[in-house]
Length: 422
Length: 165
Image (cartoon, rainbow over all chains, first blue to last red; front, side):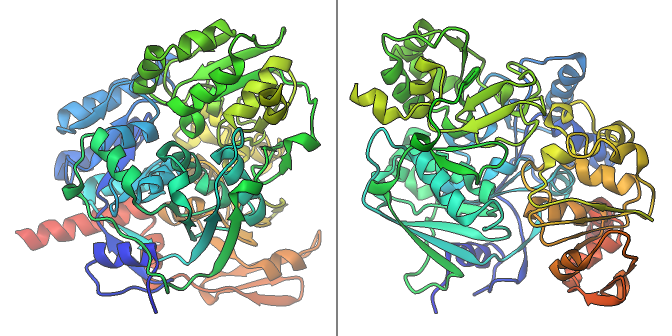
């Protein structure tokens, strides 16, 4: 019997010939990502750090992104503590606030490589599965332990195989595809499991794959992973990483799966995740006309250049509906600069967009776009939980950049096929 | 001892709102906001020894550990669920909080049923019926039984240092 991606990576990284689902293995992660929570993490282990130091200063990656620029003295001190820790312990991979959302920074800087194990004290660490990495979220305490000890345990997961056929038909996007998959599998359907994407992967760009892997955790997945192909290799070269620096790993054709699903991408339609669960997915055409107060375009799910470009193309020459606000949240400084070069930011601004600094912004409800009771936000982010954007009496609906742009013009939830046709 | 009963897919934003994630980290800062958007009665009334009984996918969403730290700090005896999200599950091990996956017990519970827990025997009694739940693997129990991951890590670091000398 062949082996899945997870079985192969975990066997290799735990120096064993083979491992089986359910087995507990000990591994040394290639990188450990922390962000604004670095301060809370290092405060737990201040005395231990003095005694033992950081196991390997090359392993931690620190990106300040969650509440940036600081919204309060408390959050400013969080940043200050993280900077001091990086300086005191020689952490080379430290990224100052404004560089971008941690997950985008990890891939742009070439820190997430195929076949590597990456853990992060953020649930959307699964994003780097887009590049063929074993990437998963952990909590702050575990991050603290890995800083000190360099290793952790992982349970070898069962794997769900998703076969993709055909290709997506614009303006349908990878976001519609992943929301459709989550709707079928359910918010808990992949709990403790790995998800592998197979089939006509070449029709999906790296941006598409990042959007999809990012949302793996919304079906409970430990990892959500794509095979490495020419696009991956070229993406990594652009990030400064030559192919001799990594060894791609992929599942055997006869690997054993706990579940298999097949999707004909040509048949995917624009969908939206309705309040307050990500698997509460409806076709946009079945819920048209819902009034929207705030639009959020961007985040680590859909804040890359192709996302902003797709939205700008629909908004061109149009404005966000009166009485609505449109927030633009690029996933990184590099995305922002590239979008400026191409006139995309100017375009979005002319359409009424408010450009926010590259970071997590309003996605987690801390600042920069908190909702009021009774308000509804249409967002390209990954979560629509009650209270997520700072108010438990507000609603969040998730969709693609294309659906968001079409809806922004009307101030109401709108199928993008309607806008693109007209 | 009180039973707090909740439904499916209780996410970490409901257990501890994201807006406080970067301003509250210590148990005393966390406690007043526990389950704030799910059950406003909880924080003021929870007592040491209470049990949470809940549906599938408990703790889904963010990796924030404040829900686990807070529930441990207020003395929750155990969370009995149809299932847990994986980061929450790991986090509970890391803090030494007892999680029990036992769908049958969750389904069987009716209001005012007496609930008795024998964690060492892997048993939970609901009314007059005893339900069994699987024990965690030894490596994992060792972490929980050390009082959590950081005490366990310190033991391992001392051992490593001792070996090196």
